[in-house]
Amino acid sequence: MSGRPQIVITPTKTLGDSGRELWEYRDLLYFLAWRDFKVRYKQTAIGAAWAIIRPLLTMLVFTVIFGRIAKLPTEGEAPYAIMVFTAMLPWYFFANTLSESANAVVNNSAMISKVYFPRIIAPTAPLLVNIVDFLISFILLLALMAWYRFQPSIYIFLMPLFLLLAAITALGLGYLISALNVKYRDFRYVIPFIVQIGLYISPVGFSSQVVPEQWRLWYSLNPMVGVIDGFRWMVIGDNANIYWDGFLLSNAISIALFLIGYRYFMHTERQFADSL
Image (cartoon, rainbow, N blue to C red; front, top):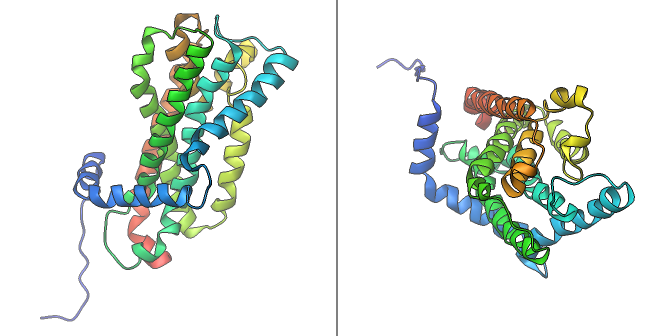
C-alpha cells in the first residue's frame, strides 16, 4: 500500500446538507446554546431580566429624545413608545446574534481543533439563545400594548416569518464574519462598530417615513430597514406607512447576504482547524 497521502474530493455541501447535519448533531447544538445562555447571565443578580431591561431602557431614551424633544412623527395611531419598542425587538435579536455568531468559531477554537463536528453549529448556536431573549421581550411588548390599550393588527400572527427574516440577516453576516475572523482577527473590532453605527442608521428610534422620499430606496440598502419596517407593519397594520419597493429591496439584500455568508463559510471551514 502506498504511503503517499490521499486527497479525498467531496461535493460542496448544500443548504439541505447543512440542515440535515444540524438535525443529526442537534444535541451538540442544544448543548452549545445552553452553555452560552448560562455564561451570558452567570453571576448576574437579575439573570434573564436583562433581556427586558436593555431594550426597555433604550426605548425610554429614544422615546424622550426622538418623540418628546425632536417631536418626530409616529407610525399611524401607535404610541411612540410602542413604535420604538417594536423595532427594539428585532434590532437586539439581530445585534446579539451577529455579535455572538461572528466570534463563535474563534471562541470554540479548542473544540474545533480537536474534535470533528459540523463547523456551522458554532455560529448557529447563538441564534437559539437569542430566540429565548426575543420571546421574553415579546411578552413585554404585549404588556406595553395592554398598558396603552393598543390593539395590534391581525398581521401579528406573521411574527415567525419576520423573525426568520431577522435570523437570516444576522446569520448571513455572522457566517461571513466568523469565517473571516479565523484568518483576520481584525474583524472582532469591526463587529462592535457595525452594531453601534447600525443602531443609529436603522429606523429603530424613528420611523422610516422621516427619510426624504428621494433617499428611501437608497436607505433600504440597509437590510435591517426591511426587517424593522416589517415588524412595525406586523404590529401596527396598514396604518404603518411601509415603503414596499424599499421593503422588497431590503429583503432581497438579506437573502443575498445569507447566501454569500453561508457559501463563504462552507468554502473555508476545512481550513479552520489549521488556522486556529
